[in-house]
Structure formats: structure tokens, C-alpha cells
Image 1 (cartoon, helix red, strand yellow):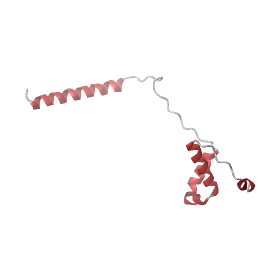
Image 2 (cartoon, helix red, strand yellow):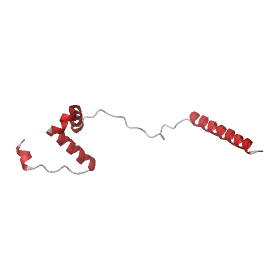
Image 3 (cartoon, rainbow, N blue to C red):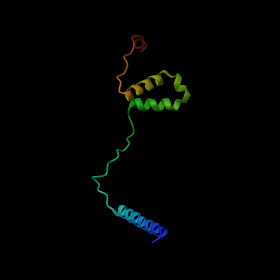
Image 4 (tube, rainbow, N blue to C red):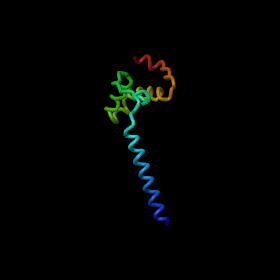
Length: 95
């Protein structure tokens, strides 16, 4: 056998194995218990999430909105796993 003929034979065998593997994979029944279940997305009732949406809708104006700055700070702290910073006495008096 010369080199060309051997290469063609190898290519045909490779394609045959690939097609066989694809057919076996497509006809295989999937076990319901073995497939990882994906969590379904529930509408969020998290007040922080609602405020984030409100700030998103404000666009550039949110950069000057005190409530949005507070929400972003709280979101950052939650993401980083930090406890929220204690409020200053001046901030408590303004409430």
C-alpha cells in the first residue's frame, strides 16, 4: 500500500467511528436522575434587587442619586462578603 491509500483508509475508518459514536450518543436514553437539574428562575422579591432595577432604569442620573449609591454600596458589600459598614451618627439623624 502506498501512502495515499493508507491515508484514505485511515480517514474512512475515522469517519465511520465518528458516525457510529454520534448515532450511539443520539439514541442513548438519558437517566432523569443523573442529569443535573437547573434551577428555575423565580421572580425576585428582594428589595435590593428591585432598587437595582430602578437605578438601572435611571441611567446616568443614578450616579447622582443617593439611594442608588447606597444600593450599589450594599450590593458590593454583599458580593465581597463584607458586613455593611456601620452608619455614621450624622446619617442616622437625617432619617
